[in-house]
Amino acid sequence: MKPALLIIFLLASPALLAQVSVGWDAGCDFNINSDADALQTALDAGHAEIRLSHAQSHTVAIEITSNVVLRGGYANCSEANADQQTNINAIIDASGFEKTAVRITGIDLASVRLEYLTITGGDGSSASSPGSGGVLVANTTGEVTLHHLDIHNNTGGWGGGGMGITANSLLEDGQLDVTATETVIRDNSASNGGGLYCSSFHTTFDIYLWLSDGSVIQANHATTNGGAIYTDRCRISHLAGVATHSLSTDLDKEIHANTSDESGGGVTVFNTARMVLQGNGAEAFDLTANASNLDPSASGQGGAAQVSNGGELELFNARVSYNSSGRYGGALMANFGGLITLASDPAGCSYHRYCSQMIGNSLSGTLPGGGGVMAAHFGGQIRIYNAFLWLNNAETQGYIGFAQQSHNDQPASLLLEGNVIVENGISNDYANPTAFQIGAGAELTLAYNTLRQNRTTSTLLSQLNDSSLQAFGNIIHEFSNIHQASGTTTTTISCNLVRNQDSIEVPVTDLLEGTVSHLDIANHDYRLAAGDTLAIDVCAGGLYSPLPDLGGQPRGTDHPGVDDLNGPFDLGAYEFDVTAIDAIFADDFGI
Image (cartoon, rainbow, N blue to C red; front, side):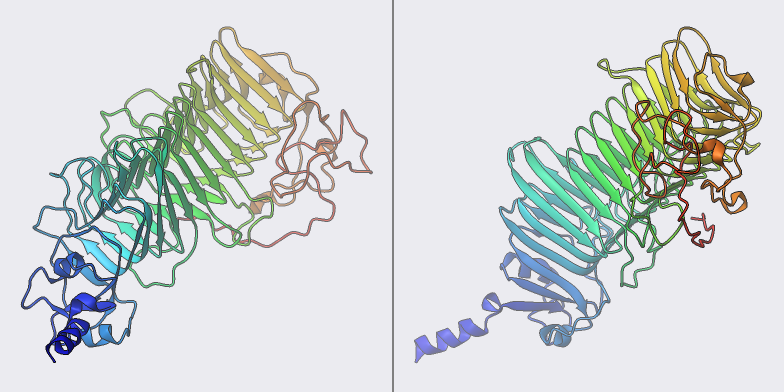
């Protein structure tokens, strides 16, 4: 009988259960009243699934070194054992331990899932780099899934106040996939990546991070770079959406109200890292109200984003608005070969006439610099397609854009195509001396934009020695000085419509003088009206090859009722569309 009794005992033992519960009541498989480290004990035992009671906070700092599903959402162990899960998080509070709250380390081909957890009180500031505060995923391959987490009020050291994802020099190849849904990272701090830090030592080891379904990163702070996110060699994709959870935050603002003392108030993207921030037809991606250069003595860059050393940032259907910095790029800063691209989906969106917006960004600091909206420096590149730029300001040069200095023979460059650029630089709280300033080793291309009623007492296009400017197919309805150059410059201004050409300092070709009425300026609708024939069928295709217009229409559609000047391409942000039906949108540009 003894062997039979032994078998029965082993089957009943928590060590062999498919899932176990951890909490404080009599029904718990691991009872905290008798073992303060019950959660760690359950993890060390290697159970496949651990369910946590949220009757009290779990005051622990834990380490996960094997595959597990760790689930909160249970009122007590009886409900955990019956799998009666709610959306109320279990709390892991590491306050006082001076450790990372949750460490996931050293797992090969991981399958780890954390769900319905609040993680707070972690402090990795005294740990080895990166010293993340809330969650650390380190030196692991495979898959880690995070669902319905609230990661808040944690403190990191070098990187990752809320969360850190790293691979050290020993992981030369392989892959780690981290997926976060309905996850909030808020009110954390670290030197780099106040909210999230991601870094791989080797370029041959791939780290992918996907955030979606209402995941937001808000109100985090970096004492150096990357208030929300700092990424070095990782691939990050963050999709807009609205979560079904009830976590207390601005659920529709993905990267919002983060700060840094130096650069990248929102995100910092370094060393071949790639980041995609993507809205959709129903929801814009919000990169809003972030601020860098909180330390005014630092050379702060990029209120919303700093992209450098070959990093790339792509934004689609995005609101990049109400960000601020002190020296370069109130919203966007690209340098040392960094590339930033912002575009709108040609299919359009249901939430606004303008699917991508850059509104209310500002630059104001004590050090010389420029770029109220964007700045490219040392070979950085910024490309803006089919967006609405409005009410941006700068205390220094370029209340819209600033560029200077090449790097490795690559000029710093700004390209703006198909945008509506109106009423910028008009705040008297800022000097706003120029709309665009292009310095030595830099280039600006303006193609098929509509510029109207920007600051009247400044210069629209300012070129310094050894700079390059190309302007094709634009409608420039401005009362300011349009162009000013100093030194030796390369300038091509061809096939544009201006109110008055007297303030252009270089020879121009195919320049038209006059004005257009647009459909409804009062309601920010700058599509061409039927009577705006001065701007219809003007430019030839060989001059510049534009993408579809701001409304998603193909360029170069010939209007049979208008004689071509040089070709079938219409001027400004919109190709005239005789079949267009005016959609009604509320002009809600708030944050």
